[in-house]
Image (cartoon, rainbow, N blue to C red; front, side, top):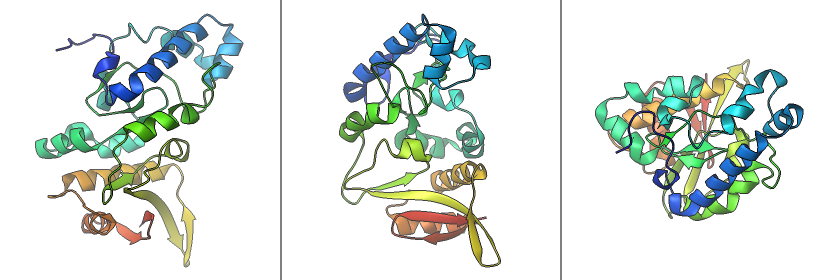
Amino acid sequence: MPEAGDPVDLGALAFAAELESLRGQLLDALEQLGGKPVGQAVKALGVSKGQAGEVELNAALREAPAAAAARIYSGVLYERLDLAGLPAAARRRAERQVLIASALWGVVRPADRIPYYRFSAKARLKGIGPPVAWWRDALAEAMPDEPGGLIVDMRSGAYASAWKPKQATLLFVRAFTEQGGKRKTVSHMAKAVRGEVARSLLLAKKSPADAEAAATIASEAGFNVELTPDTLDVIV
């Protein structure tokens, strides 16, 4: 078993057989980026000059201390999902069912041990190109995609375009406000809504088998929802 502070083991991450090589190539490219002029490096990484320290951090990811992905990722979606605060049964379900989209790793499970890093879908590394395109073919091979299966999609647009199932049902969660009979898409707080909906699905006595069951669980959890063939719309 890895000890606290041990570095990432690429062979131990989710879908290593399909994704390990591409993960290694990205780490190599980030190491090489660390030797480039600062202006060139921050532009490639898609960060500001004030975040130039992230270039050096990324260049040493193979040796950096790793922790569970559920602890590394932050932001409003993860705060509302609150994986660590779930009851034991729901946490076990999350370990089996939750996949986290990543520009650097492709996808990881909550317990996969990774280092802190800064690499988004906006990055453009030489020899790599857009991360979404980099991962597309490998994710198509790796990701679960069975007829009759249900995938509830909480990803933002850039990450959603990296993979879509061909056989399973993909149910994308959207958030809207409604005033005077008119609806407006929620931007930032959409992530909070998605985190809360994901939590409600994990807390349910039984995982939803289809879109209708997912909508029922969300409704019983107190959300005002409408179901379309492709989306679960939450009106807040």
